[in-house]
Length: 77
Figure (tube, rainbow, N blue to C red):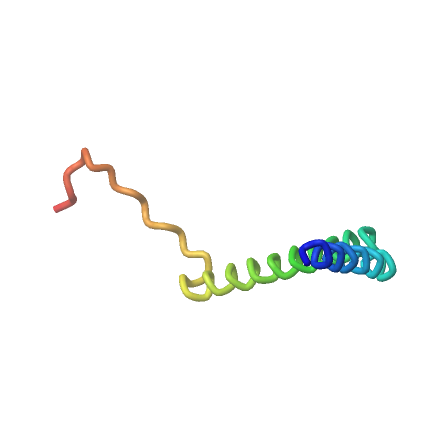
């Protein structure tokens, strides 16, 4: 019984490998990964630009940051 189960599993693996090769194989998979990587890069650039614009909108048009006070100097009176 175990032998028949093992043979069925091996046959299923062979059929899966043949189907993978017929649909384009590893080259097609690499091409799809490259396409997705380029789209992901462009989307992340767009999101970064939107967040930058949103930050400028919230903070006001490029207001300078207040100067940092050193802890050694006493506060102004």
